[in-house]
Image: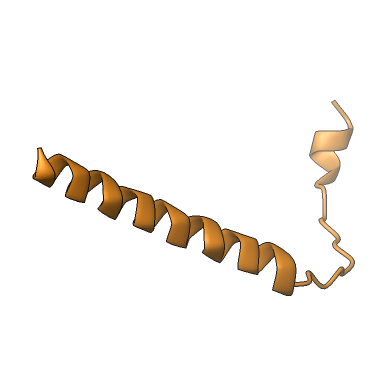
Length: 47
């Protein structure tokens, strides 16, 4: 049984680290808005 507790503790620590990393990304990274253009061929417009 102690190995099960050790395994669950390891999984919980890894999940906490992933959650903390995602929280840090959401908090500290600010996306830069930019304009986006895409050319559409005329053959797709005239069906």
